[in-house]
Image (tube, rainbow, N blue to C red; front, side):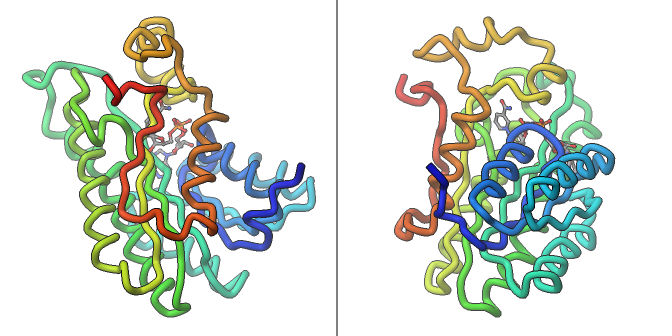
Length: 251
Ligand code: NAD
């Protein structure tokens, strides 16, 4: 069955070269959304965008390091210049530093995590909301983490930055509640994207032990939940940090 929820919607996605961002782009393109995709990995982004164009999708791709405000703003500008508006902003780009104890964590690791995971989301919301105020509506999804609502041992810097994402999401949701701009965060538990399979250094079997289901959520399951949150029909879902965690937060 074709997913018609996002037909012709203009959607901006940061971190679209891999993992959740890539899958979001694929699922939204299949539903006839029009896309503005950004990533700091230019080569990966070009290949994701080209593959989508080959299926007939309307896609603009821009090299974008989300730690650079001007580059994030350029994605919003590209949406407006190409498609005339921005319906949905997904601030998904994120990364981490190798796990280590709090007492061994360096200031530079804290700064790096904040620059990408927190400031990147802030820049996204700032320019998306400015455009959405102009057009009179919009939907924003920030990709936080379970580390944004609970403690994450050995991930102090990542955890702090993801908590900042949840705080900014709630603040923006309250600030713009009467402006017809709907803003939420999603908080996934571990899922086997390259961030986890290549960057974390912990086995999926080990990570799955933390879940009541004793398994990780697939990227497809995570993205299905994200699409539900941004579904325009979910118009009263606002200001939430929604755990997609196979029951972890139910413990
Ligand atoms: P991923 O590594 O597959 O994809 C992340 C993408 O973000 C990559 O394409 C990367 O190049 C891009 N990126 C990183 N830094 C960037 C920057 N400065 N500017 C622009 N792009 C940048 O990982 P993923 O799991 O798909 O991660 C997507 C989001 O989901 C991240 O915010 C991550 O923190 C969050 N998350 C992931 C998990 C998980 O288990 N996979 C769990 C919770 C939250």
